[in-house]
Image (tube, rainbow, N blue to C red; front, top):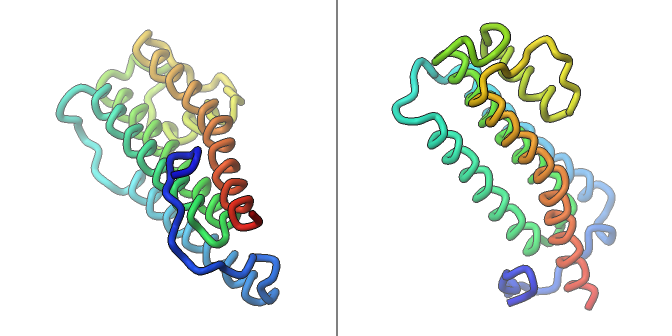
Length: 188
C-alpha cells in the first residue's frame, strides 16, 4: 500500500510511453481521446434527451447523489491512473469525462429548479440555458444575463463554485499526483 492508499499492481515492467514507437503513441493517445469524447457525447446527449419532467424527492438529495457519482468516478479514475502503464494519457481521459459529468449534474439541477419554480432564476431556463449558466459559473465568466435569484438557487450556485475550485485545484492536483506516483514507481 502506498501513500495514496493504492496497492501496487502486480504486473511485469512496462515499456515507457516515450520508448514506444511514434505510431503506437499516437494510436494510444487517439484511442484515449476518442473514448473520452464518446463518454462526453453520451453524457451531453443524455442531458439533452433523457426525460426530466419531474423529480421524485428533494432536489438536494438528487444533487447529492449526482455529486457522489462524480466523486466515486474521480476516485476510481485516480486509482486507475496510479496503476496505468501510461498515466498521462489516462489522466487526460479522466478529466475529459469527469468535468462533463460534473457540469451535467449541475445543469440538470438548475433545469429542475427552474421547472419547479421559475422564480429561482432571472428568466425561465431551457436545458440549453441551464447548460449555458452552468458553464458560465464554471468558467467564472458570469455574463449576468441569467442570474440566480432565490436563496436556494444561490446556495446551489455556491456549491457549484466550490466544486469548481475542487475540480480545478484538488482534482487536477490528485490526478497529477497519481501520474507522478506511477512514473516515480516505475523509475525507482
